[in-house]
Length: 608
Image (cartoon, rainbow, N blue to C red; front, top):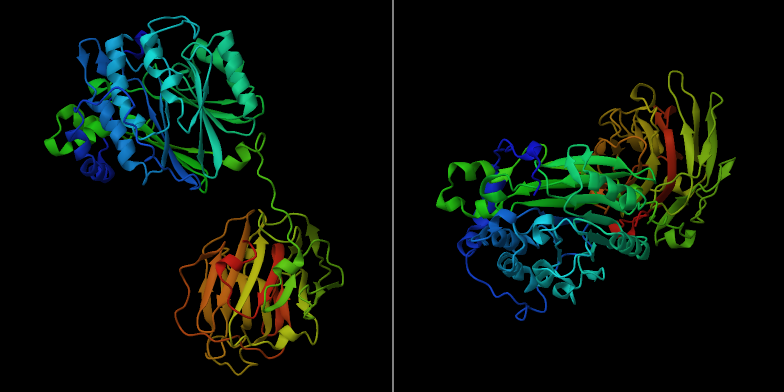
């Protein structure tokens, strides 16, 4: 707890029970009903298993519990709120994929043996299920301004290294016992929680630096009792901790502390030039001493965010009993300080100490799955003829319009087999650029794919892509018109097949099946600029499905579609023909392209 006068006023209560809170309350009634049952203080009855977070899921949750001291204050001890929060973690561990809990210190008000014993009993709920968690000493737990070299204390007796010894996540402790580190696996990698005493000694700083040095590729969440005072402000000790430890260790990307109130945040740029997010969370000034509120840090490595939520399981669990006026205000906090999202590009943020290795190029033979009719990759500039690597003779010739040219780049989709791409520089009004066309007599020109097909391509559009000049350019398609094939449905001047990009950058597969007079169309969603994308069009001989990044889109027609109508004319890469003449040229990069005369499963796509 901070006794500074500036933090003694209560924060205005934030309402926000909402539907989510109601649903959680229903699930937590049992927790509240049993919260006052006494539990043994030892872990002798600990089960050998039971806590099984998914170590590979790219979504996981780190739970945080700040100052609980007012619940353990001399003769006034109430374990129920803490036990309700811990039961919440156990009951929701699977659906929330909760991997770890960090307590931020000041477990008790006076650090007496009776207070520490009471809170220790509550935490046996986690011990018995071998849940990974950390605690650390706040100033009230040790009742001393001395450093971590203070020696024995009731806190150390209850929460020293011996308590965590043998726990899968426990990494070790400093010789004094007041500092610990914990390593858990989530999203397919190791993460660390470095739990530091409220006042590090020189020995403590040295120990922490050594732990980080021994885990150079591990992202670290640093927890301590005092660091941030309020929004964008560090305490004097917090500044020392930043200067002496955090700033020069790029692994530390997030810090969590309590001690002060209300909740706040700061961001600092470390010596490596990366942001470190520093969060203050503490609710002891609120009703019932904060009621053991917990913060849920929901990591999502696909969305590159941490979604943060603050909730009181104890109050939620009492909802069926009828909440009093103050409980209704505290059931769930929804203000900007308590529910927010942190944007982190995890791969980029961790690149300095744990770079993701680039996927190596894959040899051509591996990409020639049975049924491959054509495979083109661009690992060097195109000049004259681009060979079909399938060996089927579907080579490509470069065609220039109004003096245009094809560029080349080593840039490529991270999962592309070949490491390179052609840079098309198409423009319209007037038309200018260059594209590729299959040579005369190429077997692909007359293929009709009665038994199905898979057409794949990688592409990337630049920042200067403009719909008024670049829309409806083709990635892959076949020349020849519906009219020339005797297909009179829809516009007879449209090409027989084209995988194009609309004015909204939506991929569209539009073609004339053998069994239809009109055009069958599949639509994808808008694809952002300056991002590599993989497209796949798959026909199983009956129906056609468009995939973006291996995911089926919503607008896939249900009508039966057999094969692709052909009049024996060339296929195009980077060009779109209308009325039998080139009408638009791609403005962007095109990577590997493959055409297979059968339906491939997603697991056989080139980006897998």
